[in-house]
Length: 170
Image 1 (cartoon, rainbow, N blue to C red):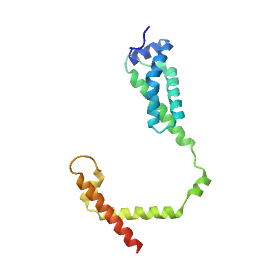
Image 2 (tube, helix red, strand yellow; image 1 turned 135 degrees about the horizontal axis):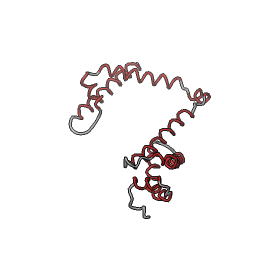
Image 3 (cartoon, rainbow, N blue to C red; image 1 turned 90 degrees about the vertical axis):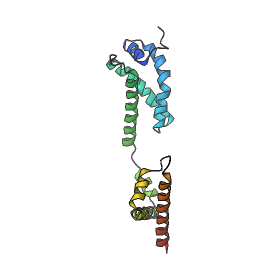
């Protein structure tokens, strides 16, 4: 049987029927895109490869539940891959506990005070802006005409914050 020009749905149906040779078509078609998808979620090369392998393992494990009447083969494959990425992210989040000694060594009270002061200055500058300037900043830089107002609001906020910093320095 020639599998090169067959749809994903048909390949999955063939796999469900026990034709494991379709993995030789599915893996080259989707292995690289699943890998790229995992890398876009900031996984290392090794973790992305693990996600691809786990995705195909789950594909084989769950092929019996593939509903060929829906003809949604690609969506079904992508849902398996997305779920693997989500599961991997959850495992990373719960398995990485901060080293208490490292936190204590890296804590710099002076840097924290400077950061808090900058936030206070920024908050005061924000309050000093007119409402239309705040609305413009909330809207963001965007594209096209009318962005001059955004740049003007940024410059005004910058001026307000610099004035406040200079005032506090004296």
